[in-house]
Length: 352
Image 1 (cartoon, one colour):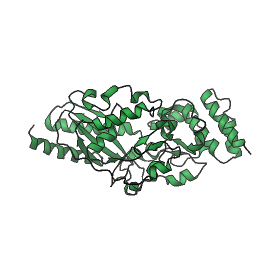
Image 2 (cartoon, rainbow, N blue to C red):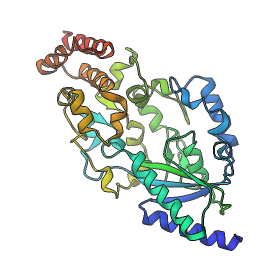
Image 3 (cartoon, rainbow, N blue to C red):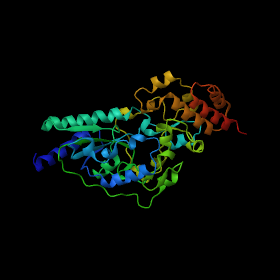
Image 4 (cartoon, one colour):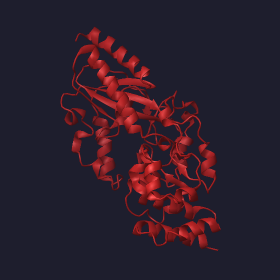
């Protein structure tokens, strides 16, 4: 294709992206040498914890053409997810009897929603120009999505390591299409965090150890989602009532004053998870958990870790007979992991 044809195609790709519900689409090349150095440093310090997959793919994560041979450009897309009719997250965090679930997980699993739209976008390109070599990714392969999105002009990497955008804050998902089409690239946006350290200061577990550097082993999202075993006792009181993920660094970010709510019904609140009571969620059987959370990203942690997380939150709640009774009923749970956290929580509840 001639350069003029590629420019016209790029304009169409961005328009198709908007029609598919994406807030924005950008184009980047595959040079992630700077990001690769940062990734290697992060891994060397062990900040990835048990997330072995972060290191297991070698340089494929930071070299797109090694992951998908023939790749010369990456199409990055941004999709807003903050549910428009959810309870105020600050109010939920302030209510120790309520369960706080990260806002991204209140609705449908974003992997399917985003992947389908990326696939549709790639197929529109094929319909326009004929077959081309591509692969779409939604947090499902070794991809440095924030670095690629920043290169494509969709925003800049904030000090909390998430992508920030002046018009949309950070409440959005990212997805990518690796392609062999030599599309014209977009200019990256300069950072706009300045001297602000609000995200670093607010982190409940001090997981943001330096600007643009997170120790996942201390991050509440890691502890409640990625970690398969026991949550370190010293960190349990710091989790508060957060049972799946954590949004504190986003809630305090000044740029999220400009964030947009989700336009897709897929991200509307399900099962009242925006402000549910801890004791009510703790009472779900494994069958209820699987049925209620079908199609939810939360289901991936399984019922055992669901109970582990809620037990910690119940231990952090003000003492009450209702909570103590709920915990006491699980002291003989078949799972050793659950029993350990329940015993810890009950001991906290019974302290005078």
